Image 1 (tube, rainbow, N blue to C red):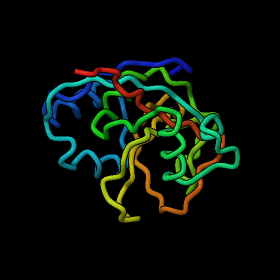
Image 2: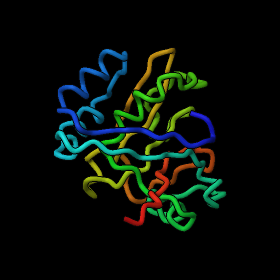
Image 3: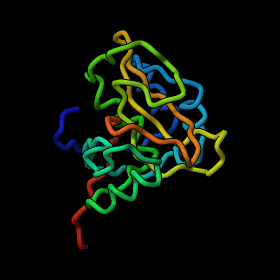
Length: 171
C-alpha cells in the first residue's frame, strides 16, 4: 500500500469462503491469526466498506513510540478511526503486492520490520489472546499474522499502522 487511501469491501460471505479466498491467494496464517478468525466477529455479516490509510506512530505525533492505547488515542485526535476486525482478511487480499520485509525474522517479541499493523479494537484484554492482525511479506510469502501484546508494550515510532477514515455520511 502507498501513503494514499484505499477502499476495501468486506463481509457478506461465510467464514469458510473467506478462508478459501485467502488460501487461493497464497496467504499464510500464523496460529494467532487462526484463533482470531474463529471468533464471532468473523461470522458472515452484511457486506460493507472501509477506507483505510497508513500512518507511522511518529506521524501520529508519538516520536518516541507508544502503547496501543496511546497510538489509538493519537489517531482518534487526528480524525482517524479503528478498522473493524473482520476487515483484516479483505485488506490482506487487497494488498497482495506489499513489498518484501527487509528481513525474514518471523517473531522477535517486537513489531516486525516491514509489517503494517491493522488498528482494530482488541476482542479482549487477556494478554494471552491475540490483539489483532498485521500484514507482512517474507521471502515472497504473503502473510496475515495475528499478534499479542500487553497494555505496556511500546511500538516504535517507525511502526506503521492502518487506520480507517470515518465515513462522512450524515444519513
